[in-house]
Every structure is written in C-alpha cells, then in structure tokens.
Length: 326
Image 1 (cartoon, rainbow, N blue to C red):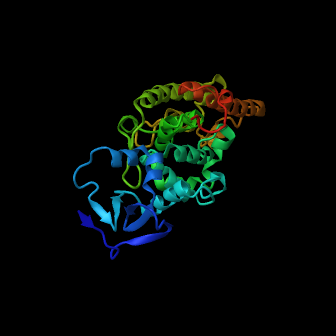
Image 2 (image 1 turned 30 degrees about the horizontal axis):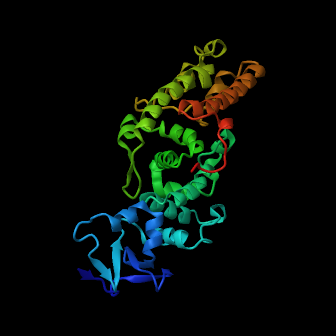
Image 3 (image 1 turned 60 degrees about the vertical axis):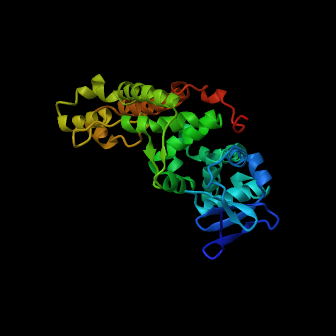
C-alpha cells in the first residue's frame, strides 16, 4: 500500500468535503467526496468497490481514505462533473449555463462513468447544432455552442452525438447527427473518427448500416432531384454555348474534385455555384430561373423531411421534444 502526500498534488477547494471518505485524483488535483453517493450514482464506481479488484487497483491511500486515480481525465472536467453530482443547484438548469465547456466536461465524465441522469440532462445542449428544422440547421455554425464543441470533438462530433443519442434514447438528435456522419469516408464510418484529444469514436453497428445505406440513397436523390435541374432540357440547350461552365456544375453535383477524386455531396449543401448557373441561363426568361430556385428550396425541405425515416426513427412531427426517455 502506498500513501499519497500533497507535495505534488492540490486540493480542489470547492469539491473537498472534510468528512468525505474517498479521494479522487485527476492531473494532480484531489477531490474528497462521499463514496456511498458515488456508488449509488455510478455503476462503474459501484463495481470498483464491490467486485474483486487487482491487488494494486485500490492500494493507494490519502490519509485514511482510498485514493482513486482517474486516468486520462482532465481535472477541470472532473471538477464540474463532481459539482454536478454533489451540488444540486450547480447543474439544475443546464440551459442557463453560458460556458459550454462546463456541459462538455460534465457530459464526457458522466458518459465514461455511466452516470446516466447527468448524461440525459446534458444532451439538450446539442440540439442547437443538431436541430429539428432545416432553418436551424442552416444557421447552426453561428450558434455559440459550435466553436467549443468543434474544438473539443473535431470531426468526431456527429459520431459522438449519435452515440450519446442512442445510449439515452434521444431519438430527436439522431436524424441530423447521422446525416452528418454520411460525409465520412467508408473507412471512417466503419472504423471510427478520432477527436483532437486522440479519443476514437465509433458508431454503433446498427448506425453504421443505416449511414451506409442512407449515404447512397441521399446522394442519388441529390443528383436526380435536388440538383437535377442542371440536366433539364431548358438548361441542356445552353451547354453547347458554354460547355466549360456546365461541366463545372456537373462535376460539383457529382462530387468530383479538381484532383479527379469523388466525394459525398450533401443534398443539403448550400454552396452550389449559382453564378455559373445564372451565366448559363442569362438568355432564359426570368420565370425559369425563379422556378428553379423555388424548386431547389422545396427539394431541400423534402430531403430534411426524409431524414428520420432514412435513419429508422419516427417523422419529425411524431417525435416529442420533452427530453430523453428514461
């Protein structure tokens, strides 16, 4: 048995209960809390202290208390997680918390150590980026949650959200999160995506199948419906006059890059090269151009309405937004 001194560690002043009976350590920061509450809230910690452990797992002490080192966890994340667990007011109204980093910290640690009620309470933060309407989807990058969540999870964000949504039965997040997963390569869909911190997130096998199926179906719908107007008779009459411009539009729709590679083209993409389209149609009556733009907006709405069915959940208007199911 080894006894830890405080020479290389520091107590967390707002998560240190003098009458606590277990000490947690993360990055040299010490937290003294109550073992019984920890066990009642977390199956992970319950098993740690009730199931047989390796000889060295619980051999460290801090004073008379067992000391648990939380490997790989940031002290700042552990602090807000424990405050959420032991201070009923700290995490009572998640929507009022301005610092998104607090919610991220609580969610990461709660998910890792299976504190489900904190996971469920945290999940609604992600609805700003994974909404139920196309209008909100189009402006999500302007939301205050965008930068900190992207910084934390990087390209793995939609995969992380999809997994959290599955584990909490938060179906309302799944269509848009899994839709964004369609932008991954086949290798990433099956093998996972790494976050900036090096954590690799992998979709549930069920969702891997759904994404692979939807990926191709949505791409086909994009080529034939959303962007299909570039192949209409009225526009093809202009091709001979400006083949270069039409070819550029065609390659964009097909997802062809300048290097000859093919990428997945989102049917909700907003960066269609309209300048080239207007150049091709400059001699057409304005009604044709107006009709095309109107149909484009309508087909984007149709795609959005298709997403829940594509990913195996009820239609948008059938999913009630009342928080995750217990």
